[in-house]
Structure formats: structure tokens, C-alpha cells
Figure (tube, rainbow, N blue to C red):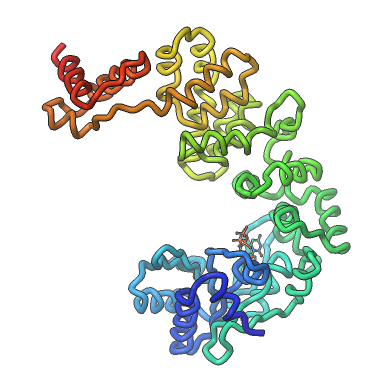
Length: 421
Ligand code: CTP
């Protein structure tokens, strides 16, 4: 079964040409290359997926190096794992060497040896993720389905490939629920039985905080994070990160409003991170001195970690300031330096109607008030770069909040007047 026309339909001829070219480069080097994993699964589901994983029977390092040279693309080699990333146009293409895995103990990262496509597909989590697409020039875009992944995909089934799968890698317990929830699939009875056994025997306790955090973080980026979190909670998987995480369903916590809240706030603060808001809220239920080291060992993106720490540090002070703020300027000054995640956390933590009105006023009106002039205009007018500029902008914004509709010239005059004081 060739899937070339499916690729053309879902993506463009460019991607088809790119994959063919990578296959030809492999062939020139006497290697066989395949696209593997989520891309193939999603292609059969007619869903675009721009995470392209290429697997080659042989060493991926020299192969990715020649692909990088031919495409004139940046290539990053990870010699230790015999993997590589190529940055081509807007795509990141991952390269790996077909391998067999051996897990020295449950939850550990595997020891690997070079192998062939069958072993490489067999070491994977579920049959639906263990299909490949040949890019060998003689077999273009031929589906390689050695473990009946397509049949399971059509029957909406999650099935592990062998009995040790959950023991080898307990993150697969989270993944089974995640794919099940995302695609509305159910576990096949033997997989489900081994899933339950794995939970009873506490397999996830062998996982590092980092690996569990990565799984929870992926849930936050799913379309329906609350549905998946509920499943993590009901199976006990959430509590392996921290026992307090299971409190999120308490009726007095407003966790269920998180997705709608972040979507609403995104229309005002386009950089708000869903993931950071979820972490903020979950970690805000534990003492700060416990939350910080946990977060620092979770291996999340540095930007997420710093937004969360910043919000956890500041929300109580911001709340006190908002309670006593009496007018628009005081509300603006209380919140002007906070990141969008702190604002979200305030919405979630606050129980006071008056404070909620002030938050609405800030997000719907005050936060978007900006001067017409820019920092460059001020520098051109002879004002030194530095804290002075922030002070001038604040004053102009305060004027606008007070109801003055200033022209650019009036703003510049005000700036010069302030800088001469
Ligand atoms: N994989 C695995 N076991 C894991 C993680 C990954 O076998 N614990 C394999 C699967 O074949 C998977 C592939 O590696 O398809 C890529 O992993 P990942 O990018 O995490 O998953 P995707 O299937 O691409 O899923 P998503 O759509 O969530 O990115």
C-alpha cells in the first residue's frame, strides 16, 4: 500500500519531494531509510504532523551529515545516541539509527545496539506507533506494518507489542491514556490487564521526576487536558509527580476554568503559555519552598519554569495590592509588571468579586493602553536609554488612563517636560 498520494493531499508536493530526496541520499550511501512513528500514524488518520522522524538501517550520523550537506541545511549531531536533527525550512527532521533496546532495570533509559527495521519497530510503545513508511526509491511510500498497526488504528485500539512494555518504560502508562484520550481509542484487553497490573505494582515509582513532568506537561498541550488529567488522577498516575496534585478536582478549586481562561487571556496577552498556567495552579497548592525545588528538577523549558516561579512568588502580594487599589491607575500600577501567567493565577486563586472586577478592568482595558511614541522616538529626542524611558512611558499611560487622548506631539512634549524635571 503506497501512501504517496495521502502525503500529497495532506501536505504538499514539497514534502513528498523532500522525503524522496532523503530516500535517494540513503540509497546512494547503500542504506535503507524510513519515516517512522507518529507521522505515519497521523498520515493514516489524515491528520497533519510536522514531527518527522527518519530511521535508517545503519548509522544515522554520517547519513544525516550527507543529508545536511545536500540540502544545505543546519545539522545537529548527537553522537552518543547516534541521532541527529536537521533544520530545513520550517521543519525539524529527526534522524535515528534502527536499534534494539535493552532496559537494564525498569524505568531506566535503555542500552541500545544497531539493528534492523523489525527490531526498531518492535521496541516501540504501541502497534499504532510502530508502523513505518519506506522512502527506499524502489518502494516509495510503501506502508511497512509488521505488527498490524493499521488494523488497530481502524479498530481504535491501543495495543502494546510485548508483555514487558510497561515494565521497560512506565511512561507508556501515561502515553496509553494520552493516545486513548486524544483519538478516543480503548486499550485492547491484554494491554489493559497489563496496564492495571503495572499500576498495582507501582511501576511508575521507578521514573524520574523529569520523565513524569514531561508526560504531565504533554497532557497540558492536548486538546482536552482536563479529560486526560482526570484519567491520570483516577488511575493514580498523577500522584507519582506529587501527592498534592490530586487535589485539583476539589470543588473549591477553579481548575476546570483553566483552558477557557487561558484562551480568553490569549486574546490580550498573546504569549501566555497554557502549560505554565497549569503548572502554576497545580504547584500553588503546596508550600513555595517545596514547589520550587520540585519545579527546578522537572526539566521543563526554562521559560516555563521562570514564568511559574515568578507567578508563585508574586500572586499573594499582587492580590493584596489589588484589594486596596482604589482607582484605575492604582490597578494598573499593581499589575503592570506581572507576566500573563500571574494574572491567570490571580483569577484562579481569587475569591473576591471586587478583585475580579479589577482584574477584568486590567485585562480588558488597561493592559492594552500603550503610548503612540516608541523608545526610538525618545532616544531621537535626546533622552538617554535606561529607566528614564520606562518612567516616561508610565506617565504617558497614566495620562491616557486618566482619559487624555494625547497626540504623538503631545506625548513627545510631555516626555521632554518629564526628562527636564
Ligand atoms: N516511542 C516509544 N515509547 C516511548 C516514547 C516514544 O516507543 N515511551 C516511539 C513511538 O514509536 C512514537 C515515537 O517514538 O511514535 C515518537 O515519540 P513521540 O514524539 O513522543 O510520540 P508521537 O507518537 O510522535 O506522539 P505525539 O503526536 O504526541 O508527538
